[in-house]
Image 1: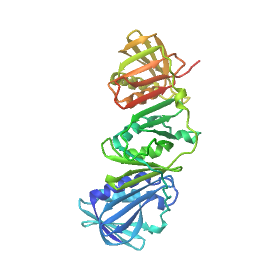
Image 2: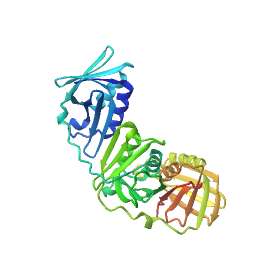
Image 3: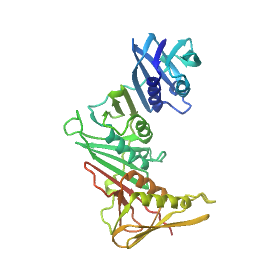
Image 4: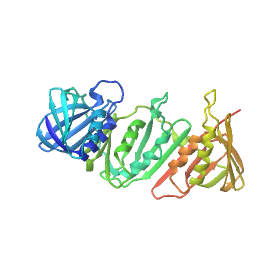
Amino acid sequence: MKIVFKKNVLIEAVSYALCAVSNKNMGTSVQGILIETLADNICRLSSYDYDKGLNITIEANVIEEGNCIINAQRLNQIIRILPESEIEISLSGNIACVKSGKSEFEVASQRGDEFPSMPELDTESGFTIKQKVLFKSISQTLFAVPQNNQRQVFTGSLFKIDGRKMTVVGCDGYRLAVKESLCDMKNAPENINQRVIIPGKTLSELMKIIGDNDDDITIKASNKHIVFEVKKKNLLFFSRLLDGEYIDYERILPRHFETFVIADNDILLSALERAALVSEESTSTGTKSYVRLSIKQDDLVISSVSAKGKVKDELTIEKEGKDIEILFNCRYLIDSLKACDSTKVKISLESPKIGIIIEPEEAKENEKLTVFVLPVMIK
């Protein structure tokens, strides 16, 4: 095998392939990238960690056909520090030579047939939307998806497609984020109705592949897998789905409120980040203190006390309804406000014992974000 790549093209392809490379000790083949020739000027790079996989096709000068597996992290490090020129990858036995100009590396490689077999992606008819719609839906809900949970289903996000409406939900037991978007879907089956749970780790990697732009992305789902195809990049990214029943999130959201607050998002966020310096200090017992929100008339007082100090901040708000005092995990509020991505936020409250709703104050066409946060309960 002997292939010559343009450096920038190879770097981009390898960076995408890293999204499906295993970081666990599951064998050297799943820690590597499969490089194989398809035609005179076409190569395919593949990665697969048994949960998610990726194929990307790029142009290259194929001098001699063949295939091999090279450790992904090692290959990524090498190609980034080689001189700004074309990169040649050739194979001699189980040694791959990576060369650019007068610089040359030799690294261990494996035969291409040692790469794990990828699943057959028997998907139903999908649909195509703008990447920015998917990107925003994930970025505004992923903060509420936990890395670990006793119920595996909660380590994923619920994706619900009903007609032209896409709903993405994340929940960690303390926060619930719901993003609804009316999408301009292409090639969607009439009266499409799908409901799948996608692992949060998959969505984190998908965020590295797509962008907040107008490029298209095609989404297809089966009983076991979800497939994301970016034709502009000749890229296909897939993942297994989580099996189980997701929480009935609509029943959790409160409907009755006694107090409504409009606040400047940046000012409130800055005050909470200052409070976090105190509330997030670890104590001898490993616990963290809470942040207290005291809403009275047109003032919001934010305070926190820990074994190492205390903090107090005051800001002006618009309030309608009763005065209220309520306690929260400070980080939960910070993450929720960052997700809103708006100049002002609306906070709806009922009582110190019931969770609050945080949402952007400015209504946006064809989209809605709702974040539900539970308060801290103390004796």
